[in-house]
Length: 323
Image (cartoon, rainbow, N blue to C red; front, side, top):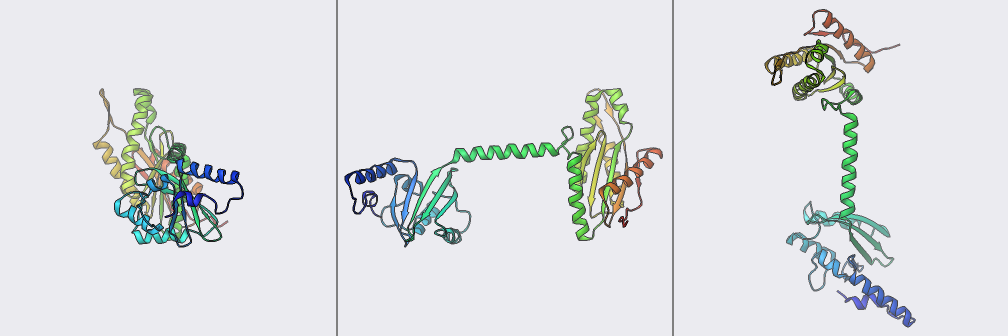
């Protein structure tokens, strides 16, 4: 590896001022925290700043890109290498010298994030500059986390932590498309807690909210285990979607939920509250809209209520609207 002065000094400076500028630049590179390295066309290390030597634990003597990375890998220093060494090196080598200016991220084993810039000259020499941008990356992660949390909050019901109406309808369309492509049935159920107003009137809205949360937790655990999804569509009404399942499976699942709620009712320090629910179910194995399915399930729910509540009612399957 050439020493820094032989590289940074021009071969034939035209003026003393030019030489001074080159020497000043060289001193800046040596003192900078920026890691700088020059590789010749044969990929031999021609120059490296102290920061680069430290970053990659470069050993004395002639070095190539491959030997530097190999040393890092075997001594567990430098960049994080997540695949077999030869595969990782081949992947990186395939990207190097492909364009005049290339930028890339490097994750270090010590947890730092580095930003690299590779400049390739016409003679295939390359200059690499690497800076630490860990602080910027952490801010990026924080912003992404905040964005994801805001997105989740926009799709989540605050009280029950289930998908809200917009999110559960969006999920319906996703599952409906999948079932249509696979020629599978899909069951939609509207679930409504019976006489819920009396819970609020007799125990207060805080207890009513707790009952809704209790139901959501019990139902979500059971329905998720069956491969379905449930969301709160508003008030004491919930929507259940069972992809790939006929209404008979939905009925069996809801009956199991009823039994669970009787075994594990909502309780406070003062009282135990038993509550029930009614549901209307409908299935679709042909092209049909969410609106048509919801309307059919809602009619079935109404029938379940006028029959005495605490039961399910199944609508006739909704067929495609060919008009």
